[in-house]
Amino acid sequence: MSAHEAQGTYDAVIVGGGHNGLVAAAYLARAGRSVLVLERLDHTGGAAVSTRPFAGVDARLSRYSYLVSLLPRKILDDLGLDVRLRPRTVSSYTPAERNGRPTGLLVGGGEERTRAAFARLTGSDREYESWQSFYGMTGRVARRVFPTLTEPLPTREELRRRVDDEDAWRMLFEEPIGAAVEDRFADDLVRGVVLTDALIGTFADAHDASLAQNRCFLYHVIGGGTGAWDVPVGGMGALTDALADAARAAGARIATGHEVIRVASDGRSAEVTYRTPDGEGTVGARHVLVNASPQALAALTGDEPPRPAEGAQLKVNMLLKRLPRLRDTSVDPREAFAGTFHIAEGYRQLAAAHAQAAAGELPAAPPSEIYCHSLTDPTILGPDLVERGYQTLTLFGLHTPARLFARDNDAVRDELLKATLDQLDAHLAEPLADCLATDADGRPCIEAKTPLDLERDLRLPGGNIFHRALSWPYAQEGTGRWGVETRHANVLLCGAGAVRGGGVSGVPGHNAAMAVLEGRPGQGG
Image (tube, rainbow, N blue to C red; front, side, top):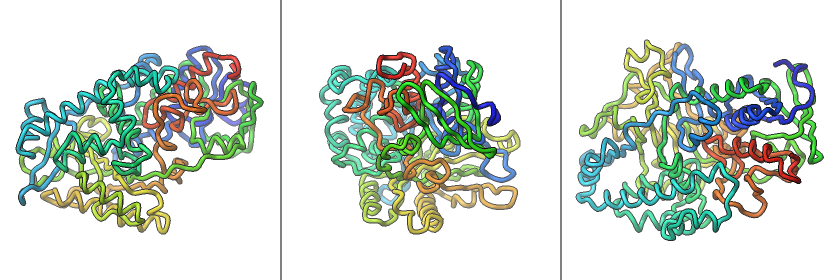
């Protein structure tokens, strides 16, 4: 759509064409509302995109977001999306050294195999039985909490009654998750594997009084009512392309290359000003849905911006000629890398890494986790690469807050990447560097993104992948009915910074659309 076409007045103007904005656009257009999506970049998808990052190499990787758990089946069904989410055959593998010998913990491949893996690592069935009990509990909570994400916000007490398990409520919602981990598990490595779900993109200690780690843990174990993390077939871009197609098919108009610079609202109508290479333009709207960060929303409306939440992750994309051999010969690399491969994520290692980063130093043993998309879904690679046995690796590093990169982002990135890969190499029978593919210019196929890179490339405040600290999934003062409301009655926040936002879920987009369609008095309906 050209600039002169983005004119007139719409029932809803959506600022930003990330996955949440596209979900909202599709719902509203299917309900018969006139919808215009204005996207700054030349493509939709936001952080949920597939790109070919390596010159001359036919590998279409999920460059930023990479797994799906929180996207409700309800949204896929409501919008008629032809999107396949494929389960991983293995949950996780964690290499270790015990008594001077390489070993590890493989979770997956059936109950008996997993039980045997725990016994081999720990010497008894105790940790496995604790594991089953603990994740049985989180599974029950997931089945009760997850359906509420696409309903009006429950109160805290309503959600507590819904959970209907006081021990689970205390462990997840009231006490630092470290207490439950230490009470339930004895083995340091097992404790670390459990804790990692509390630290994805979240810089916190196991016993942090803020419970930021608990909120992160909750969102990582409730997805789909099971906590399973699935692979989007075709890469993350396949999902957002399908959403854009669904929105267009329902009648929504999508204008890329249109950067919104101002939103003026009187509570009943709004004027949205945008910029293109050809100049500025304006469009009218009954409702404005902002699929951007709370800081961006404040900048557009002239309000006081909230303080940015600091990002704390390293994202690395790699293409390999082959998977590396492992020192632990009891496991096939094709299984070890199919699930989540934990590196330097023992419980004490995670605590040490957090303490070092909090003191302003890079962790000496940076914790991270890896998985191989192409083992579950080879369609992201060209046929020639598949035939030659090439594989992708996605690495996500923890406890690397944005403040560590402020002095020299490029130099610190290089230093951190080397230290992170050294931790992986310690468990490999050959250096990872020997397995890396090269691009058309002969360079290794590896790219790393720090929080500052994400802030620059995607406008994520502080490089925080959730836009701000994750929220409890219940109503609190000022959250509104759906968790998307702002102080402007007809301006809604439909991005990850909404209550119950974060991850690739579509939940804020769904909820903002529902708020519009309800048309409740005083909400500009």
